[in-house]
Length: 374
Ligand SMILES: [Zn+2]
Image (cartoon, rainbow, N blue to C red):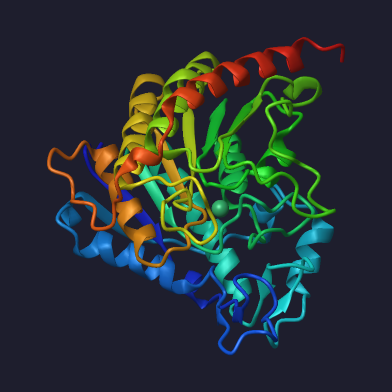
């Protein structure tokens, strides 16, 4: 087994998905002289790839080209009707398949198949002991995609497909920790009645953002039937910051994952909680992400022989997303002399007192929801 290195699975087809331009992720605004590229563009991950290839710890990464998923593998999580809908969607020009920001174009099918297949290969690397930790550097993201629905720039749910693949490969229990700044609603939906996949989402309190997106990301959404107690939502206030994320990891996420005793941990690894992200407001710096990487690896070492898979989700600041992903890898690999943060502001915006108060509220809300009459 290779220790203290990370496998990175990527695929050039992931860069073929071009969502065009708009008013952020929405339709171009007639009020604007200059519309901007859709935020979920290839540039964000080209920069992640670049910093990992060129940065001071580049020799700690082993690169591997992934593969396309098969349609059978996509069906591990998605319904046949939905898969057919995606494959037959109008793709000659960028078109929006969810009435909102999720776009398909001529390169999309190759990208989503490569993203799902490369996520599966990241799981394979880890469960075959080729590497303790593997990172699927893929796009478009996936965690908003429900079994039968696209949403929020996500078409196929890479994390959920990878988790299903792990279970089909003999892993008994998988914990998914989603630290993308948005609620992992699609993953929650797919595993909501399951007790073999623990889903935890740390996010900003965006609520439900459309009629077809009923999940709200509140602490009261605890799972259903057999899955009751196996979904945990941790909606942190806007502006939460580095210390809040560390506390919520140490006081809630890590104890819950320890209770669950997974054989594999998958991180829905967004960097859009960063302080410069156009789609997030939770103000993490590189240090915050470094700490998340450190704690995730600590859990994996403690519970599942280090088995840790990271699958790329959001992160829309073209430059800072790359620096934050780099910091996550430093945390996982235990780098003594981390890279200086070129963009960190003073973190005095943080108010840890209210975070501690909020954590107590989470614990009470969680217990109250579980003890309610079914
Ligand atoms: Zn996100």
